[in-house]
Image (cartoon, rainbow, N blue to C red):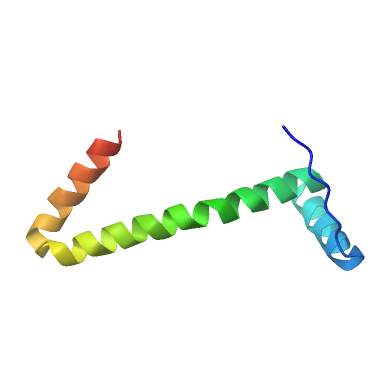
Length: 75
């Protein structure tokens, strides 16, 4: 791991500390978890776009087969 120094406003730090305590996490764990969630958003958005395009590309009766094919290729 590498270190990053952040200058946080006191009010934000207190909010983060309270949320971390409520969830039984350290401040560092809460921040890392929050950042990881934010970083996966583009992946989820991209997947939704691909599935949306597939939904429009295939007739309804072929959509399930196409989805199964894509998911099988990911394994």
